[in-house]
Image 1 (cartoon, rainbow, N blue to C red):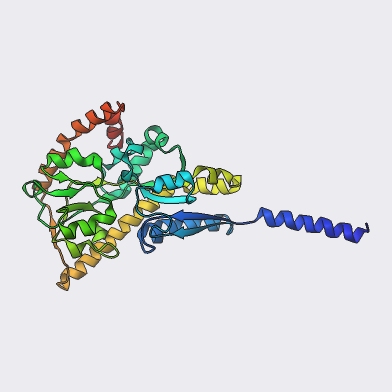
Image 2 (cartoon, rainbow, N blue to C red; image 1 turned 30 degrees about the vertical axis):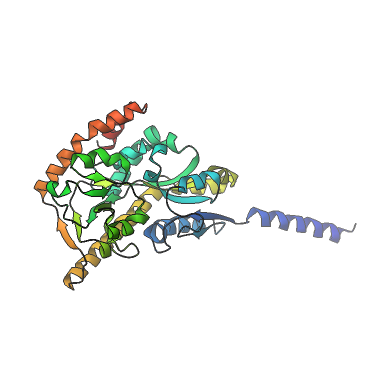
Length: 338
């Protein structure tokens, strides 16, 4: 074998190794929300930009939106565990039995808004909640606020809440709403529009931005009520653990650096920013006389009554947790609200 042929073989082998070393990794993402949703255009866009820039284009995403890999939020965590997609977006409250300690972050407390609640949650996440998420690689858990009650009746007073069929952010708040005299009804967010239009429910706790496209809840309601006790709703991006572990150490490190608090704050900020856009949209609609709902700000006096009723429901929640073998529910709640 002559020297030139030997060099050609060596060079070909080197080229092959080099090509494999920089080969890309496309990660599939499954979500039930439409492509225009803020969790895609805001939070996921940030995550993808960080991945591609830090990896020099070696890590990319392929998004399957609007339930292409399975409809609705209920199975999203399972889809990540089973590898239906590499990454999924979901709502923790859709499978509350999987995340009982995380659910405590939903309850009204000292958090002022979604970003504040998310920061509070991540200060205690590793100590109290991480074990509930051990089947996946956690990328983000954000806690947006349910800052509005969208309703077909006026629920801006404690009296108006009585007998109201209302969808809470999560089942854990059932004792809180019952304390106000309401009748909690469990439904997925994707069912709110139809349920309001048919009278199956009277109201739903929701993000403010859901009054505008793509959800358009203002079309099927008469009132949008704000300044009620804030409840929250943990949402997540998680990754199949085996897929994460299959990546190179370099790629794992990149994901580690942007996961947890950084991605979680981007996720909750996407909801917060969407609410700010919705408030501007609402003001423009009111000015033009085109808002389909009456916008009501609950008085501080009525809010205080609601908060008192909410506090009265906490003992029932702690008792329920104790019955399920979780004795430190009050400790976790108090840690979230220091």
